[in-house]
Image (cartoon, rainbow, N blue to C red; front, side, top):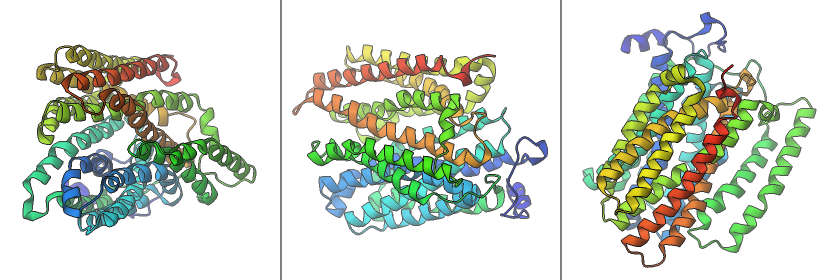
Length: 489
């Protein structure tokens, strides 16, 4: 790996855009490069999960109020979701390697600011900066994969991308719990942010030597009006969904949600006007005319709505309902993380053998895992049943998620100039649905739980949410049957 890195150092950072249709343009060291850029996606998703395990320690150390703790979590989710599309477009304009490195550098600085935070307000502001820089990194990862790899290798590369997400989700709970409990040097929760520094710096140095520059064939300008209207629309949608339930759904949350449709209409109208003038819009509206993208996004809505809330309600049930510690709960999720990571890594090979059936196979296995958990709820959630269900669910998600990503961003109608925009659109859809699912299905869970729940209430509440997830997975399964990208011939 060191030799590969040394060879790459001789190449100019400002190398020409890559045409993957030409074999001569394919980077021979692309698999090493993939490992480097996956560090960026790993860090982005790690900090989405890891902060939850440290909230009690943050509250004690910074004397944070419950609402401030809520914003420590929400600031990242809102900032990340709102700026993903813009981050993708910036890569199209200024170069994906350049924006990746800028994002990694900014994320590392933001992590340092989080680790040094003297007050809750400081931490919240640093989390916003973390989110914005993470949203600059993440779209570049998928865009670089699409520009650097030939079509036959993209499913495998995306599978490894999914593996990095799975590792981030479990490391956030297991490793985060270990760092907080270990309290090394008396730094407690601050270590969950400071650990990003050496990883981020290593990614920055390696990316400088191992990642080639790529961008669209032409140099579009940034649509600042579109950025403003898209960010406003997403903020009006995501913020009340993330923060509204904890605040008791006050009037302002419904007022913001009511403004989403007018804001979206204003955005579409503005983008159409930009297109008529011949300028480059933030989102290429013609992407919605590509069958794989349009239907892939629709299937993504059903798929991602139930994804995050599954882990939220299971974590709450295991800890609050059954008395497991944060570390023990993280260990129970290990079968999911391992099976998800392995299945994601091999999803490309499975796709080559099964073709259009992989998404149906994946969602079917996820449904089997949910059914096992529903049956386990009738007998008090035995640990063995949980482990088996998590393992099956993990395999299913590891097969389905990379396939869905490949369909949503791998359509033949996506030109080099629109790769970042398409990736940002998909990631924003996924992120928004994750937040919506946590709020909507999570509300079912907490409403069913009641004010003074006992074990039986937790079992009933988690069963209700599992049924919601099962309905959504069934919808994804049926939608997958109609996806053009998953049909034979």
